[in-house]
Every structure is written in C-alpha cells, then in structure tokens.
Amino acid sequence: MSVSLVLIVVMAALYACGVYLLLERSMTRVLLGFLLVGNATNILILIMAGRRGAAPIVDGESSPADFADPLPQALVLTAIVITFGVSAFLLALIYRSWRLAREDTVADDVEDREIGRRGVPTEAGGAEAGAGTDTDDTEFGERAEAAVHADDTAPSRDHREEADR
Image (cartoon, rainbow, N blue to C red; front, side, top):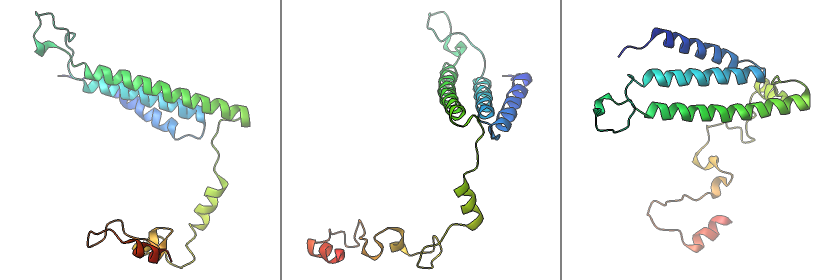
C-alpha cells in the first residue's frame, strides 16, 4: 500500500494551523482551529484506512479480499457529526459572548491570577496539602469509619453510635 505524500503534508499542515489557532484567545479563531483539526483528523482516518477496494456488497462475483473496509468510512462520518455538534456549540458561545460583551476574546479570571500569584492556601492545621494521614482526606476526620473492616464483620449499632460521639 502506498500513501500519498500530498495527503500526509496536507494533514500535517492542517493539524499545525489548527493547533496554532486553538491556542489563541479569540473564540472565533478557536472555532476555526477546531474545524481545521477536525478535517485533519478525517484525512488521517482516510490515510490509515488502507487500500481502496470494491464496495462491500456481496454480489457473488467479487472475492471478499477485494472489498474495502467500511469501518473508516463510518468513523469519518461520526467525526463529521461530532465536529458539527461542537462547532454549533462554539458558535452559540461566540454569539452569546458577542451579545453580552461585544467581544469574543477570552479574558483571564482575576481570582485565578490571584491564586497563581499567592499560591493555594493551606489548611489551619499547618499540614501541607497531600501530607495528611488517611483520616485527613474526608470532612469527618477522626470520626470516619472504614467501609471494610479488618475482621470482615459489619460494625454493631453500639459501635456506630460510639463513633458518632
């Protein structure tokens, strides 16, 4: 099987341009980048499909070895539908952003910038995040019960009432 070098170059160029546009702040450019990446993915699926062949219809005269694989065609159709749906959603977001703010650029969130500048605050206990014991990972702290006990018996009602105190 020989793959056309032109298809590979076109696919690589579409991926490169699409990723570049996806990294922009303008939502319109993000939409265009998503469309380019979707088309590049369709070309990739067609390249990976293999050789061309006859339609997979059994007429009794063709050998099954001559049939084309219908799975890549179904995958491309599915990818087209998914790209269409996500593009419609992005268009709705762009329209809503334009109606509310008269711009389609994505701004930084002020709170995210502050957290990035200051860092994540630690809890009052002084322990760093992730350095706690097993009982520190829930809001119940020391009162947390294990779901499965070591002796594989369910705790009695008296034991549960004692843990609630």
